[in-house]
Length: 171
Image 1 (cartoon, rainbow, N blue to C red):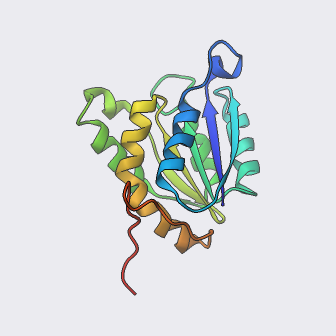
Image 2 (image 1 turned 180 degrees about the horizontal axis):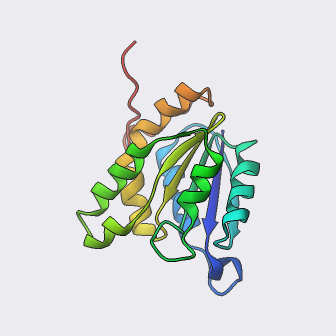
């Protein structure tokens, strides 16, 4: 299984500072998923055309794409719009649940616009930009990710059940 990690940050992409959010996603996926996996890791600026191009390109080889950054209300925050533009189906429940979880920790979570959608056989999930928030949001939604991947025809994945259990309805 190949997982895309797309970091959206003007400053990290210019080398102004080191990306820690994308690395937090990889660390969390390494903890959560026991199935052999590899990563397609990219850091690009907050530019809608570039985000759309990268999402399309990554979806050719990745079953799961996790983005970080660009989900707030600032003018340069365009990740949800780019995601919606390239997806055939949107899954608003992901964003709803992530915001609900984040609101336990910060009242400003209401400003977050995380979402998820499907492009072909790829699930794309937009995550916030802070490592702590990434972990909180992934813990809220990840139990449903393996079954979603099953439903769209992506590779079957197993989770590390001691850390997070995959929910799959009984057959």
